[in-house]
Amino acid sequence: MITLSRRRLLGASATLASLTVLGDAAWAQAKDRLVIGMSLEPPLLDPTKNAAAAIREVTTPSIFESLGRIDRTGAIGPGLAESWSISEDGKEYVFKLRQGVKFHDGEPLDAPVVKFSLDRLFAPDSTNPAKSLYTDIDKVEVVDPSTVKITLKSPNSFLLYSLSLGDAGIMHPKSAATNDKNPIGTGPFMFKERKEGDSITLVRSPTWRDPASIKLNTVIFKIVKDPSAQVSALLAGDVDAFGAFQAPELVERLRKDPRFVVVVGTTEGEVILATNNGKKPFDNPKVRQAIAHAINRDELISAESGFGTPIGSHFAPHNKAYIDLTRTYPFDIAKAKALLAEAGYPNGFEASLKLPPVGYAQRAGEVIASQLGKIGIKVAISQLQWPQWLSEVFKERNYDLTIVAHTEANDLDRYARDGYYWAYNSPEFKAKWREVVAATDFAKRDELLKEAQRIIAKDAVNGFLFQLAKIGVWRKDLVGMWENSPTPQVDLTGVHWK
Image (cartoon, rainbow, N blue to C red; front, top):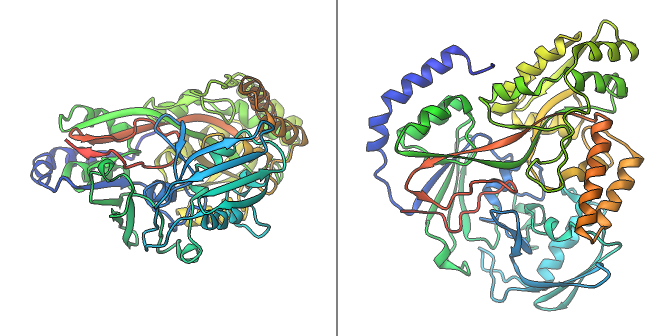
């Protein structure tokens, strides 16, 4: 089992005891204020400009809203659109907008503003990280001041979901250019200030349409990167809640503390050993298959103190279309070595493993390096800060291997994207994905999704490791936090103190 270093664990254990009394004393705070701990700092504050999940956690739907809204079950309900209709051929969507909505700077929301935002999603020069989700859109039209019509080139059964993501957040033409530093949206909270490396503060919007659902006046997202420091922050009363606690080896200690509740739920986060398919020797399927045979998922999940579910493809086990493909390439060291020899690497090779600064990646990285070492692949680990990872790995594809959780639902589409960072290019998968997207019969779509899962499992595109668990820890008198994470956001509507 891989855990934190002995020094860090001893330090954390000592802190647990010494901060208990201090934490109780520090808890005398206003009941309209909430401090939420985060392990990653958002690189900027505009979800249409960067793929980092941390941006969405802070801004969606607290600051930016979309036409639809994803709830705690993953269902789609009204957002800035109060209703919509879909044509029989699935190619026309008409959205009726809420009346009287204003942006935080007082600008009104209307159909031309929505058209501006939607046009940006699929424009030829769009830099939206999720642009491919919206390229089926042919045109967006203003029907009247409160009605927008979207016409598709071909049916897309995921369109409503995609238009409910932070990537499709509605922004005003006057503030869109500066939303990365000074986000202005229509949501229940307004941006107040950011202290780089420390915190981001939001305050309640006085113009929010449903004031009764907002019980908090101030929300502070506090950056606490080190797992043991997260425990200290909770016990000292500096942080009220961690929606995604990053020290699984310390969970049992917190479960025994009557001041807190620990809630373990599901996420859409597939943790993968992302592999640069466009770079030798990883462009060789036999090499990727060898890596797949070398992966011992039980050992990886043990490093997470048992939190996590093994996966054999890029799909969430709680989804009804999921199929268990973990036996596609079962753990088999002898088979892995034989495949490496067939690929022309009987003595293995050297590879880099660039890790982002998150706990699960750090722990899994040590395990993977050991596992691949047993078949002759000598792994050199590099630790990157989040902006470095986004630049070197995600944008520039300057890497061999990395470990990361992909946290959006319905994200098999990444395997059909041209230029995506793992450089997978499969005409077979692209054709299958077009069938998936075009399927308006959801039972048929589920069967197509199973076929899509089988293709990427067979191709061993990435090392499919485990589904990330959502470990929530918060004060017992805090109500309304999400148990599961159907999308990477922190919805604060309804969150309150008893």
